[in-house]
Image (cartoon, rainbow, N blue to C red; front, side, top):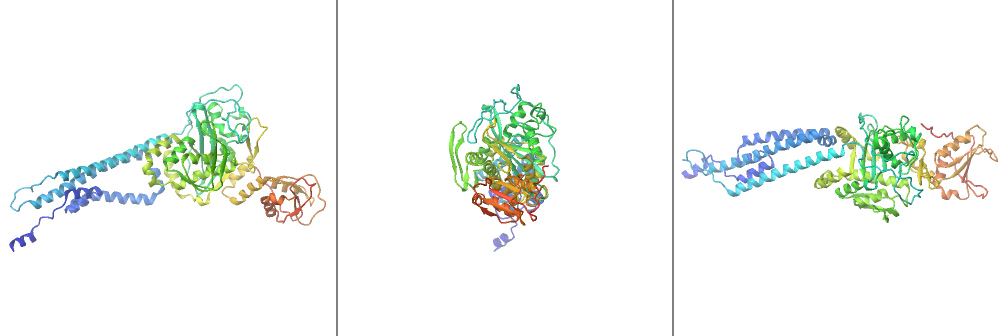
Length: 601
């Protein structure tokens, strides 16, 4: 009875596993001390982590997307690496203390009541081994964090360096005329007597984006082959973002576009005239070969020239070379793309200079890096418009499928490929602001525009010494850029379809009002038709507008007929007359709407 009473009054705590206490404090500092019954020590160890977690939660809720931009600042990364080392020491102290507290409690419990001095402790080799394992795992985890931090620092230093390609430039002789289905290394048109040169361009100051004006970024896809001595910018996409409405537009210019206007203050005008006569994909090489007339270097020159064409201030560029692009996509585990139109190309050029047949069926396709590049670059058997749309679709698919959690296991491969693939002049300290903007963008309101023939440009397949070229209709392109956030996308798309049908239209003046037929013909021509107003009077003067479609053209040109009925507010009249050599004749009347083509800027 006395022994039972002593057991009830015994103040000694219940035995606790030292390993369990250490493991609990490994999970969260202080848990092991609480498990051993040392509540004051538990609160002391847990207080700092709890406060830090509360602070971080508030920061995440407040800043969200821009937090990622802050975390990859070099100074922040270095500070985080130092902080990780401090946290490691703190956690190690918490784990060892929890182990010792539990060991002390067990020794106290096992000691007799008459014992004088501290309790006798038994050293358990299994417990010490477990403690060592816990500490080893903890150190390994923090070393992994440090490794990824160093990788991030290395990546930032490689990607955000700005500047120009470093490969030596070889100026090739002009290529013979090529049809769209043929391929040859492109040439850079230079004045006679110009020698090949390796240019050293003095970096110009990068302008700052104020966060209020429209942000324009040039995306460059580069065919980079140092062994063959050229650097072609085959993909040129300008992404334009309205920070107020969160709308985004993408503008693509085909690689074979020529006669692009040079900026009014460009020194290159003294050599080339008002326009750059070469293909736009060779502008980088021309800039590297003649730094005296292209002082901004490769990417700076492309930004200036496309900015002059579009009427935009292009702040920054992001360059991705094709070989690196394949590696990035593979490092991400591939990309899933909705192929809307089958891709058939019997003459796709390989890296070895051979031709291969490509067929990509429509539907949802999961592609490797090589397959995604073929899908984006294939140009035979389809139009430049379709090719530009495919390139934009690949970019959007990669953005939508980017999964941060899924990237973590692939970080080493991803960093390695990104270092080779991506280069930009975007300031690192601007990334938090850009990350927030990217998170706010409404992708459902994306406007996509490819400035390809025949509405936006004229296709020249033969007879030009430069080979197959595309001549831009600058006034229309600038209109398309201005209207990107104003016009309905369906209206622009309809004009492109009308232009593709190539209807020949005459407009005859049925009222005698000066300039009426010319204005209508100008508007229809701007809309994509081959319209003119011949100096010919109609047989009669109708009371209402008349639109006659000849010799079955209504079945071949449905988009044109629908457009004419929409803008002229009439119903067309099919007529058969083999003597008429045009597709449509419009006779104006008093009720004919006043239509005027948009003025060039």
